[in-house]
Image (cartoon, rainbow, N blue to C red; front, side):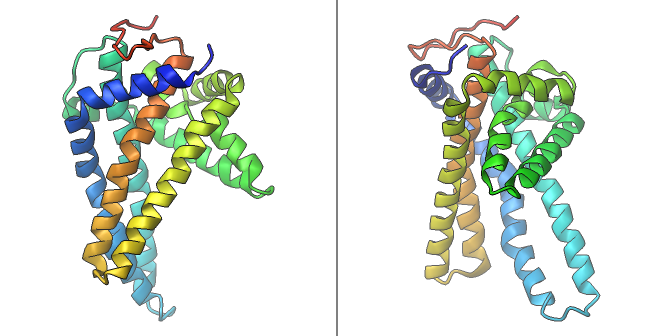
Amino acid sequence: MKLRARPLIRGSVHVYRRNAALILGTAVIVFAPVAAFEAFFDESVEARTRDLLDLEVLVSLAGVITGIVVSLLVILFYEGVVERIAAVEHRGHPHARPVEILADLPYGRLLVADVLLTAATLVGALFFVVPGLVVLVLFSLTPPIINMERRSVAWSLRRSYRLVRGNFSRVAVVVLGGLTFGELVETGFEALAHALHTGSGGEFVAILASDVVVEPPVTLLIVVTTFILSGVPVDDTGEDARLVSP
């Protein structure tokens, strides 16, 4: 199965248009705590680390680690929500409330896959960056595959590799383009907040705004990419196929 721009874009826009309130509303709810942590707690850590002998530094570092884990879980939950929303439109799945999605996601496998992917990307990045990006692209579809198929992490990693291998350049545009877009938007919002001297409150708004602008379309594109490469019909006209994948 080849990934083509027209069905990918139109299929993603179709889902987004029909479910914009749910997709954006969920983004605001799930990313607000992460934005608050980054804006307020990080400032506290910076102030405390001026005295490296202060025992509160250890507490602060523990908080940072906790924040990273929570951030991963939030992102995985949001990916799961978007996958379920897209599955309603393109796979004929029944509608589910966010609380039902929350209870149904395979968090353990998703978290293991995310940690493995992050570690492999970092190791690859040690070899002049490019290998890390290659690893990231090859296995980028693993979380949506885990959500869709509910198979093991190892099986999902192999599945992502097989799907991406024949469409590497196209998937790279989606994944790396999304990362670049996210960095540009986040940098722009934070620069504006700093220029206006808005303090932690303004930084919170900037971080949350960048997450809400970036995460919904990027996540949706990756999910629909996974659908297309898995053989799920995504109608080129933008109308949902309402077909269940085998």
